[in-house]
Image (cartoon, rainbow, N blue to C red):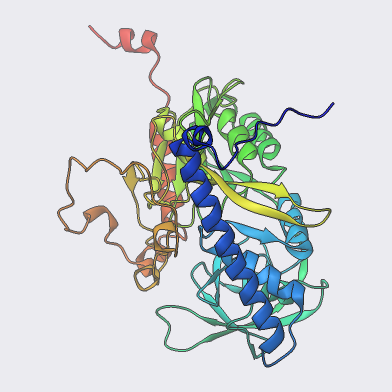
Length: 445
């Protein structure tokens, strides 16, 4: 059976009346869109015919797609077969290379963060470094995928990176050997009576590894455990479901995060569903300007639910959700489809998460010279829908007497990570076991 089609006859007065205003507006927009698409095709044909060198059609089309997505925000992109494979590699957590998370900034390759226990981290490459040469060949202007492909490779092979570091007068050179990078998303250790859980990334293993870390530390520390430090510094983020799993490890109940799309009705909320595996022990969450996305979800949720004290520096401020949309067997689209909000309704976009206690990393002697790049500094970043409320207490600009020691002075005291040392001592004080009531009564007359 053919569908019933209602046809408007152009020559009748009834047809003109039936063409309502919204329909007319939509038709006008449609016509304008088609004219713009005609312009795009005209440019494609002119380049194809008249450009000085012969250009592959596929390259031109992919360039047009990439340009379209780049005009939206820094995190939407087209995934060709190579980029799709790189994405799967990152989320699966194993590849051959150096252990660097990098981004593209005005044609330059910038280090977002080195992965713990990898050639890049051991060599001393830092967040904020700019990679200018690979094996003495200038890479400025290359695509990010091309740079990543050159840094990855067969384990055991060598590579030379030239790096420009803000604050350094000369470029730095690093000679590295590629390894099989097995991204270990979670590491843990006991420092006295405090359990320290370092979460470096949010891949498919992070939630389970976090639960295992809590179980192992609880067993090792026993009832005398003072509490836990969750270290999310320089964590670039990753999978949303893993951020929810990690947060759920430390919450009994309550909202973890909400994501909101284009319309008011397009809202999804995620809640804690399991028990707090720490038994309510005190928690301090460590963050810095490299803590982004999924790391900010965890920090914001535990802060809003009054479950943890957040300590360190203001986070990166990436409060958007990217959805992977398949386009073909090997290609896809990474598209920003929503903003996410903390349980208290705060948008992390641009503003980031402000720590409850601001603690600088005093053991990093070059911290003052290194610029702090955040989401708000990126071109075409999403604008936050809600601005943070003005602070009730203004900064007076005076140096905090707690943070006057130099890196050299701290080193003499055996402190190589001031923020972590501060966090561990804070948890130890918070978790100090109170005197039993019977003992108090015995000493009271």
